[in-house]
Length: 262
Length: 134
Image (cartoon, each protein chain N blue to C red):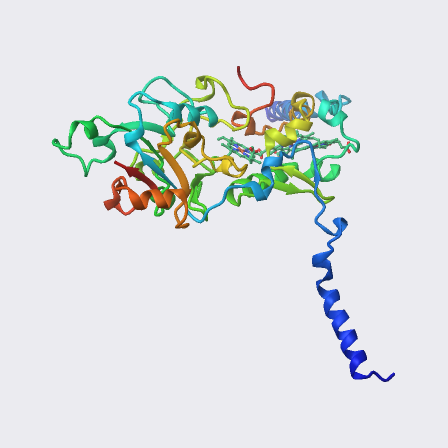
């Protein structure tokens, strides 16, 4: 068979077009088959999950009303955090601390009444250089790609090295069975048992469903801002560029990711 | 004198053998019936095809390992969806998926585990739907 120049170009052109055809007219049956089952919530589709390069939080403590505990109540109800009713056994994911306790290095006697009386919400600092991860002998505490310092409760042996390592007291041990001390169990999140350490997880289980952290959504004053520190256009980055802010015990080198606007 | 000693030894041996073999002849002829697993739940009744997440034989033999991969995948790698071999998609959740279909945990999981003497400790943390307090 002899092909002239014109014939050859036609064939070459059609074959090239046929290469990109599937991308244009993708038939339904060629796509990945996803048959939704009743117990697969829409919210879990991977496209809805909130993702970031580096999750962080900014807290504008001056907006915090003195006796407001909305963020604490929302977090503790969502995560089945028990209330043992005594400070010795206390389990806490987010709680309030006086300025002098949260910022021992920055505080002195003539700081001014308004700062001295401030009650700041404090939680796990989700450190970029977390000492708790370094000391955990079972790797139950680990750092995710997006910076969240997370606990795998299945691996926790209750040795409490992480509690000793954390300079912020952000970790609590269950010295007793927590279940009887949970006012209302949220069926969507597991409880813990006696002998397991727990802490704030930056609501990673909610981020996977496209929901923001419970404490951030619960705050009526919008004092808590959550976002991606690696994105220069994110709300949190724009806010921190404008306002003076502090990190708790920055000199320790743990690189906390909770920024306090004071 | 010697004869007497042999008698005592023989008696001791007989008692020893009776005691050691006691479990065998005591339990002889008795069989414990295999557990009756109930699939009678609203969620399973609604299924057009009565299928578990993966093949029944695989689930029966390997659900403990399978749940282990679910757990590690969800927590360590953030894999919260499981695509079964036949293409159906499930949320990775012990309470939310397994116990949604098998909502009769007592007549299903527990019956088999009790029969076999297996004691999964998962439910000291994971909630059993409907049983959650208050």
